[in-house]
Length: 101
Image (cartoon, rainbow, N blue to C red; front, side, top):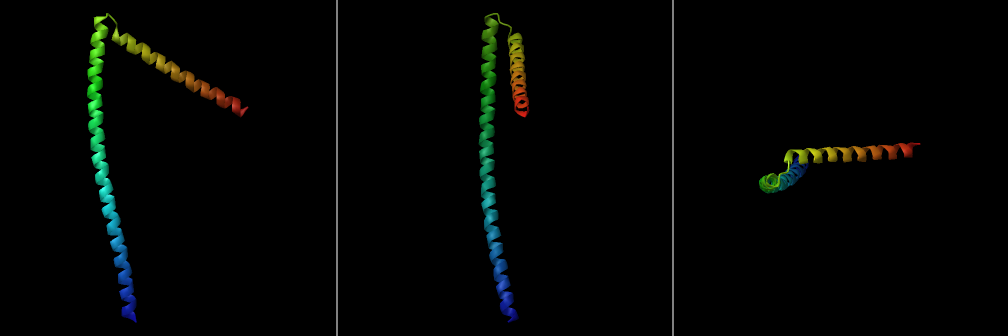
């Protein structure tokens, strides 16, 4: 009977090993798919960055042609964005305080 129990245990271990091997192959496939998707996404981001740089260069050239100060416009925009974020955060805090009271 000792051999029968050993055979059953070996079959169980073999079955577990086969399941693990199948899962590992699935994971390999998923990782390969993720790598391909990451590469595609990276290429798309690089292309968008190039397009954005070209558009910025064109806009700066047009602004300069019109006598506009690009740096001042960008600085004003950053100031407005910062103020808007501060207002939004301040509004959220005051709402929280009202709820707590």
